Amino acid sequence: MKKSLLLALESSCDETAGAIVKDGRDVLAEFVASQVDLHRAYGGVVPEVACRAHMECLLPGVDALFKQAGVTPADLDAVAVTNRPGLIGALLVGVSAAKGLALAWDTPLIGVDHIEGHIAAAALAEPRLEAPYLALVVSGGHTNLYLVRELGAGRGGMECLVSTLDDAAGEAFDKAAKLLGLGFPGGPRIEAAAKSGDGSVYDWRKSCLPPDGVNFSFSGLKTAVMYAARGRAGRKGPLLLDDAGVADAAASFQESVTNALVTRTLEAAERHGVKWVALGGGVAANGYLRAALARAAAEKGLEVAIPPMSLCTDNAVMIAARAHELFVAGVRDTLSLETVAR
Figure 1 (tube, rainbow, N blue to C red):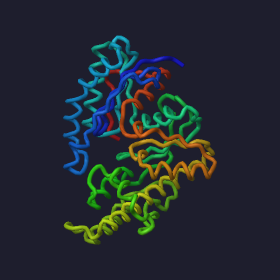
Figure 2 (figure 1 turned 90 degrees about the horizontal axis):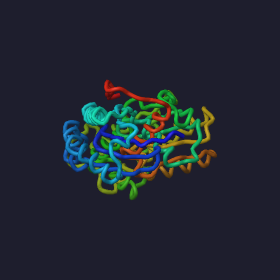
Figure 3 (figure 1 turned 90 degrees about the vertical axis):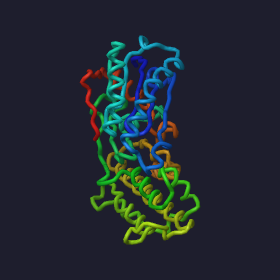
Figure 4 (figure 1 turned 30 degrees about the horizontal axis):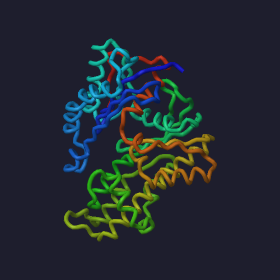
């Protein structure tokens, strides 16, 4: 396979990340600057705050990457950057920086779809992965199931089969955690609380599986959590649940989301006759989901590719991995590369 040395940048939401990666796998240097502490006071990501933080740390981070990797801009084969989907302002910061660097260094530019980066993370983590396979991408902004027909394909090689009709699973985690008084970010707070809870106390599983028999839905689940925690009027003030009740609600929420994700994935695997299922995205860091998918897939005779935690949350290594595939496929972008929120 054609070799490459790529600088990759990721700024689609609330992590500023960069990496210098050789041949799509050999990580020479990387950084991830989390903004969790900046947004915690607001209970969610504030786009303007995210943009300012990206601007402050992106270029200093790039300078540090070259020192750590022991290479120079002249050694690069391309500059890769996430250009879709995400918060439009946050994307613009990263894409503008990438364009400026590519122009200054006279280096090719490659735009990368953030979701395709999450899919590439699974292939990066599991060399045995074989196409065609299903890729479940679950994050704060996306809950989609893709059919990947060819490993290392150029643009257009993936088909979205299943999506969410309303909220993404990660968004539901954040909002449910807020309703239960657990704080931000919701994913790890829900998972921690659920460990001491009983997931069978509330049967909310059907609310996540719409009658179309194909897609996901999580808005009704959020409403159910609100009723349990705040009453039908959604009143403010003290919770109606004690600590044990919060744990049970968290466990029931986690069970319902996981059941929907696993159920739809295995249904699609059977329809399309694949042998492999891959998992990616920030919610893929949830230990309960990881174990449930692996267990259910094994019962159906399916192999599962699940990235390590560091490749589940937003990072630039996955962007470099996908960019390498595009580079090998001959994909190059111009300085007119657009940013797309959805």
